[in-house]
Length: 331
Image (tube, rainbow, N blue to C red; front, side, top):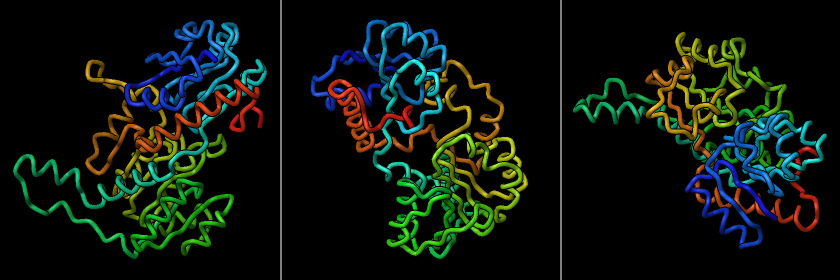
């Protein structure tokens, strides 16, 4: 199968090549898929895309006209692909639904620890020769209440880690994780109840349209005063303007983000020669108690290998069977 791999980076190309074992003709491109770059796919059977790409109805129409039959997504989320249009064109789409859950879970813990113990501020002060402790006080995580929004694979991994810290674990999810309940002490509650009593709230929910901006002015107002808010799941879960208000009125003491609602125009790009103009992002970035990483939570060797293996497995399944168990536009 001839496959054009969009948005390839130097770090993930070797993993894709190793996983393919020469079974497919992979052509790599650093270009992001959009209406202007869809013509690169002329003559290809399939394309592989990431969260940096946009497969709108117009883009899909072009891909279909160029002979593309399959889209292999190198990620879990599919909101950048117009799935109804893909289905109407009989184009099959498959994602990488599972990879190392500990990559993102551990990154969430990193954000939490760095914020709580003021590591970034401490490093900045050290660089200017200020070794005073005045602004660096944190708190023991042991014994604190951690609220987890979403207890799928990543949320469950985060829960296990925080249980190891000696935290009390609360969770909100439409479907309770029975396996996790059997593993660690854990209590499920309503979204409002979990938010109201947690010293830390970490978001690990799976994205769907009904959960857009689940954290808005109303939900932020229910948070425990002085809590820490972590989001490594999806930027659209959060109303950024309302988050800024919650920071400024000190409802939230610190914020750790690996995702941002409008990240598609920001992350995975070099802005050293093109200054960022998004006013909300610039304001968020300016706060000393806000730590933002560029959607790198997944970024471990294990995850890169896992995503590559699943992506190639999807392509293999299509090439030999015409269908893949990870297809998402058939559901």
